[in-house]
Amino acid sequence: MSSKANTIVVGGGVIGLSVAWRAAAAGHEVTLVDPEPARGASWLAGGMLAPVTEAWPGEEDALRLGEESLRRWPDFAAELAAEGADPGLSSEGTIVVALDRTEAERLDALAGYLRSLGRTAEVLPGTRVRRAEPGLVSVLSGLLVPGDLAVDNRKLLTALHRTAGRRGVRFLPERALAVEAGAVRTEAGTVRGDAVVLAAGACSAGLHPALDGRVRPVKGEILRLRARRSTLPPPRRTVRATVEGRPVYLVPRADGELVLGATQYEAGFDRAVTARGVRELLDGAERVFPALAEYELVECAAGSRATSVDNLPYLGPLPDGVLAATGHSRNGLLLAPVTADAVLDLLAGKPPPDVAVPAHPGRNPEGMR
Image 1 (cartoon, one colour):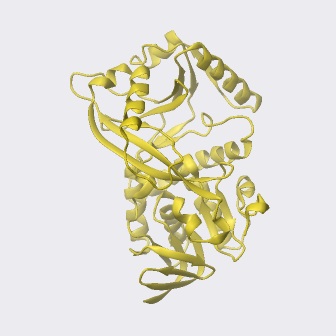
Image 2: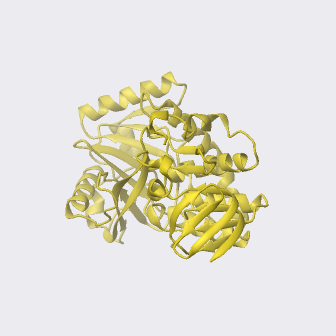
Image 3: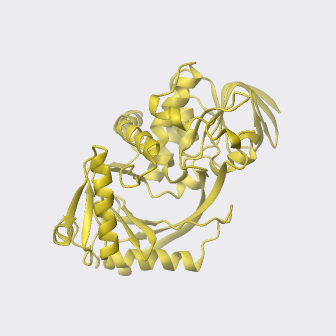
């Protein structure tokens, strides 16, 4: 098989689909190469769009990139909805809670850091947290971030897949074997094009030598639960906490489901759900929101996030001209709008947004091959 496309996108997760949709809307003839688009790690994400509550000193570039993408999210979602595909965007915000004194002090430090950067962050005593979210019965304090958003990742992927198809994107259900300037080798042959965008998530390092050792898979497990008639409904907001040193988040869905994450293991591409992972997630989440002990457990799953060496993605040209859009770690959904816009700028021969410049693949040149 040999075929020709104006733009080839390798990878059908949230990043690849967003790039393909936007590129097709801009007039590109797009082929997307992925054996199972709209699945993978993006299908298993929690859906938090929360750069502020992910922030910590030393990662200011990641914070600025995330905040810029967050600003673009309402228009991004509205454009999808206008094309008949609602991505399930929620504007209820995030609350980060502390269950003990150590975590309360950490929240105070995070709030101070965010204020030093000019960000809004309000620390609430436990009584106010419980008034805001009655199911959080054991918290000492909370950090309220009203500007954070959340999205239903599965509605989003379905919306992107559908609108990309309507825009004329050709889906090639093949596994990519290697990527180079102007060509993608697949199991069935070679696809050639004027531009190649590598957005294959954790698989990207195995497809291009410049990313070897710079993008790695980090395993994460998620659970999905559903409220029952006899239980409290899920919290209105996304709830985050650290329980015995382990992060946990609870992301509500409009249909009464609650998504729990997130374990993190250096386990390569192992996608088995472990008893330990399930136990840690349930134990941590029950400490935060005890009512979920009576919820129905409807899904356990694991996937591999694409993580870079410094928690910034790689956005820009590799040495041979292939455009990288990978290494987004926990923030693939959050960074989809700004990533798609940056890739479109590069395809048009324009510089990407200023906030995307620090994510250029040429940083850490000792790792470039």
